[in-house]
Image 1 (cartoon, rainbow, N blue to C red):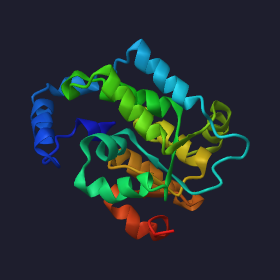
Image 2: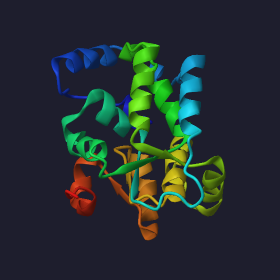
Image 3: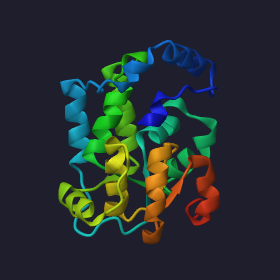
Image 4: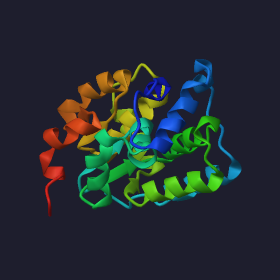
Length: 209
C-alpha cells in the first residue's frame, strides 16, 4: 500500500495525466486513511471472492499482484505493466486472489481522488476477477500458519500469505517493504518482481502457446 502514496511522474494518456494532477493535489495524510467501501461494492467483492478454487486447486502457474500493480494494469494502464496485462488477458497467466485483496482494491478504487462511480469500480473488479482464481479462507489460514516471513507493513502481509497459499511463481510489487519480505520466499520458488522485469525472470509464462 505504501507505493500508492508515492507521486507518479507520468501517465499513458491525456486523461490519466489529468487524473494524476488531481491525485497530487490531495494532502498526503489522506492516503493513510482507511479506504471506505460502499455496501454495494463490499458485497460485489465478497461475491466474487466466494468463487474459490476447489480441492487442491492452483495446479497451473499463478502470480500474485499487489493492489498497486492491479491498478497499473487495469486502471492506470501503465506502459511498463502492459506486457504483463497482455499476458494476463491472453490467458497465459492466472492471478491468485483473495477476499481481503479484492476488498482492498475496491476501497482504493473508491477513493475520491480517482473520481470513479460505483458502477465503474465494480466493472474493474469484475474484469480483474475474470483472470483470477480465489483462495479459500481455509487454504489461506493454513498458509498463514506455515509462513514465517513477515512484512513490516502488516496491511501487505495478505499478499505474502496469498503467494504461499497459491504456490505462486511470482509476487509482483513495487513496494519496498513487501519486495524485501518477498525475497525470503525465493526458497519456496516465489520470485519477487516489478512488472516490467517479470518477462525476463519468468519467460516461460510469456511465451506463445
